Image 1 (cartoon, one colour):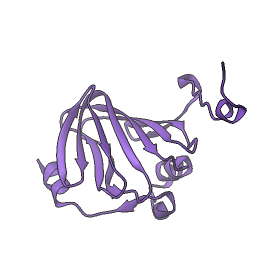
Image 2: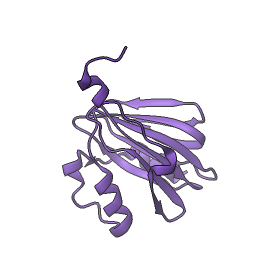
Image 3: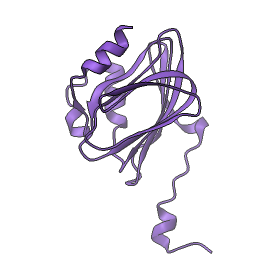
Length: 154
């Protein structure tokens, strides 16, 4: 039996065939859910060593990375790690994080932000203009990370 109408109204269904896909070079970003309040979600396909996002943090949201395929480098706090298909990494609010396909490998990730932040317009502008200048309004705050620089220099 369904719950109250407010619960039913919050159900989100996104069909893969209807999701917007952005192309950035040879990598793709499939926009799945632009904040249901509870979460935001997108799927990222990165080719051979491509960077998905440099070191940054979110003040209000945690971010989940689920590796769907391939091999990726991840920064989680000051820890860098290699993750492969089936691995899950959750980075809490305030902690630095970054992700990229590992050198010599492609990678595919499901990325979930909770609570959700509407960021699809940010992604569209970033792909179109390569200008992330207003990213802090999307709770994206750049950070410096020696650990990430060392990892990516390998």
